[in-house]
Amino acid sequence: MILLRKLLFPFALLFGLITSIRNYLYDKGILKSYTFDVPVIVVGNLSVGGTGKTPQIEYLIRLLSSKYAIATLSRGYKRKSNGFVLADAHATASQLGDEPFQYYKKFPQIQVAVDADRRNGITQLLNLPSKPEVILLDDAYQHRRVKAGFYILLTSFDELYAQDYMLPTGNLREPRSGAKRADMIIVTKCPPTISEIARANLKSVLQSDVPVFFSSIEYDDTVYSATSTLALEELNKQSKVLVAGIAKPKPFFDFLQQDGDSCVSFPDHHEFSSSDIEWIKAESVGKLIVTTEKDFVRLNAAELAAKLYYLPIKSKLITESATFDQIILNYVGTSSRNR
Image (cartoon, rainbow, N blue to C red):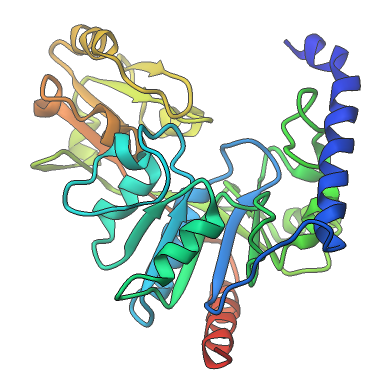
């Protein structure tokens, strides 16, 4: 696979050229970008998947929702609906996509919408009787038709965009120069004990002119089912099957796996079929099933409900969390006053 990616390097050059031309046309105003009279924050990345956008969006929701009316707008990856959809009491994961459905279930105080056309989605949100005061765009860094007010670029600790290459040789969706659009960079999934020297080295690699922050994944000390909870210390005394359909499941498996536990990995955003569920059911006889929060909304089938749990995660800033929060609050506050 690595050899094949190297052989496809000419296609990476071509893809990089095409995306560079597209960005140039937007930067020069030849292709039109649209702005809106409301604070819009983009959380995205240069690479494909696995940088921790969902927990970072949730961090912003927690930070802002006590002060402002918040809406999230996502594409709704792999959803079985079209156009603009606003989550309501009848919403499902298949209608919204797994991450938006997770936002809706977890944060009932906010509005959650999906639309592949972010310009139309924002317009629809602002036409609602109770329109949002702040809009969070999930995974929209490359959606240049909308010009947001603030861009947060995520890059994984073990897969920095500055050391990556364009698809299909590497995992970049656009050239590294796209990082210049960011107002802030977060190196995600860092070891919680990362040293000051290591952070300085990473900043040197990124060579960024904007603030760089570092975050780690913080796991909950409890797993949750549809009807009950179980402390991790109790969970670890029981045999279990760990199931994940996310881009990078290894940290999830490493955190939970005990002797005798089995791990089952599916592709990112996997749509669990009836045969998948039957297989998991057979594999988990006499065992509990633990999955990720994103997978739980798609895997919560009646056949598994009695023993299916999920483990929530949060994004935790390792240092300077107060500075990070103040930058975001200053942007939103200033933008709101200038409306």
